[in-house]
Amino acid sequence: MSLADQRTESGSRQPGQRMPRSARRAQLLDAAQAAFVESGYHAAAMDDIADRAGVSKPVLYQHFPGKLELYLALLDKHSEALEELVREALAETSDNKERVYATINAYFDFVARDGAAFRLIFESDLTNESLVRNRLDAVGLVCAEMVAEVIAEDTGLTDEDASLLGMSLTGMAQVAARHWLAQGSEVPKEEAARLVGALAWRGLGSFPKVGGEGTDAPAR
Image (cartoon, rainbow, N blue to C red; front, side):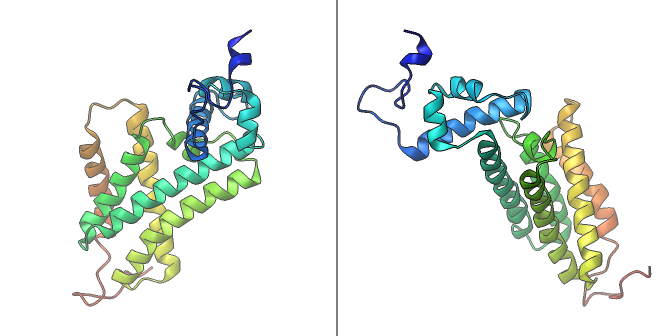
């Protein structure tokens, strides 16, 4: 009997030690993430994902009806993680200069996480699938709008202007962070984020705070 034939829902556990459903789901998602990051969505096979998790395909299908559902579950998980990093960065200080640095650093932290989950968000090969595209657009917009809300409150800029600046900041952060990682830079992560943050602050810092000296927004 082959190893694949011997696999059951208990995996490598002893009989009677059935893995809790939440733990099994996490295990399957980890295996799927490794497969998608390594091979891309289209080349990753459910057989491979089951093998990585050490379960049979029927067990995999008990938890996820298909490959797309696995991919969407991972997008939801890691989108929420990125949104939380940005939210925490904006909330950890009231100093706007430090907020900019913290927001940039959130993206560097995200791309540096084990498992390369950022590739699913920023480098997906399934953007022609509407359910995927909608999620990717949503996480980008949510993060940008969190930044935009702070900008609008502090500068008095219109929501439209603040939204454009928020999208610019988060876009620069994710591109710079991915480049830093891809190049295997010898610059430490915190120093790299600080450098990009200094560039961003030179622009955003030129917009005066509401109630401060010179409260009018720059002429367009």
